[in-house]
Length: 357
Image 1 (cartoon, one colour):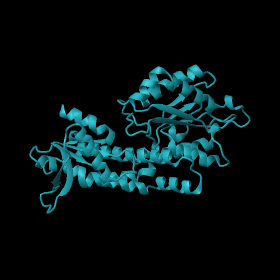
Image 2: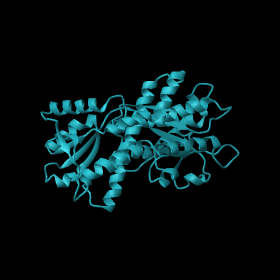
Image 3: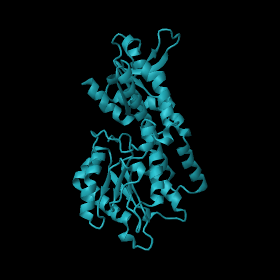
């Protein structure tokens, strides 16, 4: 799975039944936490983490959440999580997971978070996850639990693995989009794609095709977060280009022959470089506004980390939506899909070096 634009820390959240009356160290989620920490601490996984841009990891279990309002603590941790491991073990005396756990799993699906399922019991899976792989492990056997989790974690941390760990029954209905992103990042990305990217890349009357070879590629550059401005981002692009001995120049782009006025855009030689100002409208996302509200109300102790995490998640969704639209169009109409890429500002210098070579 690809891990672009992360903050350097893999945050893993474990959710499952909280064992009332059971010593903390014997509770399922705590045992899972120990197993996952052992797994991610192995030298092989240290290398995998670094290959994905992670320098460290954190694993949180519900038993360690504090406060009188556990639900709010769970919601807050979900907003920070990169990956959620769900324990679907049946409750004692039953043949089904806890209703609370299933509610939390529905939230994971709605938020579009990557997830894995595991259980210490062998009962049939609930209907809505019947088609998902549920790993089986005896949590009392730490080594066996580590071995069972090795495969899915290795796949999750493999940049060449195209599996989307956030896929679920709801996102499948909406063609890959999580409920929370249907009208936020996904909507902005769709407008940017239709009004600009598609008109540049399409064959026949697309801008690249009409330029007669003057321009051969389009790179959309996304910011690391939403605290800057498009103008600052362009200045950063120019500075990074200059450090390589390259010049960021401006040109006027007429997306249609009938256009009276063109669109100002930057380029480095034959490569068009666009910084989409539309992404900064994501600052009005309900998720970001919630962080600001909690900060004002005193609930959010470390607003910066949570806010930046949400910035990165929204930017990843924007990028993924662009690529999804391009994939669909490729199957329907001639388009220069291989002439487009959407990358983070930090990755631009290396990409320019590769193109220059």
